[in-house]
Image (cartoon, rainbow, N blue to C red; front, side, top):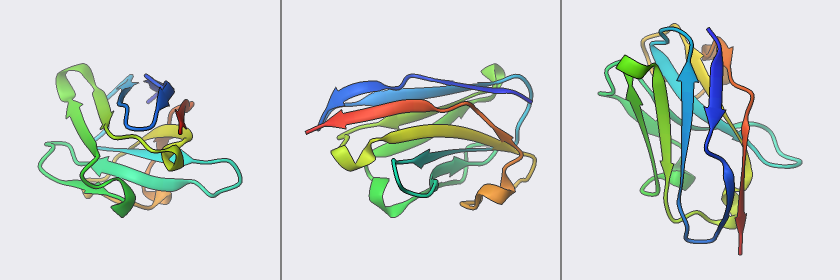
Length: 120
């Protein structure tokens, strides 16, 4: 399965962006990770196949929303009230598991990453 992420860009603090990730095949588990310069990659959000279960890292709760359209094999990350600390390369990831996980070893497929830059 190949993943293609898009939607990154440059926004001012308080602005919004919507990331998309199109998969070439079915992936039951989908998630978003990010990596800021000089930092380790961290989990941002994850969603199961039906969309009934979502998990978020504490720092984005209430601001980011993950969703999916299985008919299009696409997962989205709506990011509102963006802050400079959200600046990072965002990666989408897919897995064959059924349970939403925040650990990257649970994901089998990775996209190429899209840059999100938030200016203050």
